[in-house]
Length: 149
Image: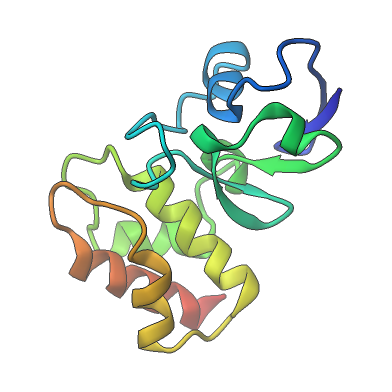
């Protein structure tokens, strides 16, 4: 099957049930996508499929056949996507483990809604867990990025 990852065409010939996350990490070496819970609940593995946030641990390769997948590595090659700049400006990360998934979730929100309300930001980001409790800084960064997006 064919899949486009970070704007590059890729061919996959393995098990169609394999989770996208393992393909990205193990076969393509894109380790920015993190393994968290393994059942799509924590958000550490969030990537975009056709611009929509999905949990790559709960998305099979057959589900992304012919689709465009964007990982944290492909969001902005130079790390200057508006949400990445806001993340740095707000000093969001503490341990950093959840940050790629948080950033990808926030970026997907801004693709769908350039000027989300506070409630829309909170409800969209609520599915991504931060073990360090950086939620106020995460919210502030998404809000700041929405002003630049």
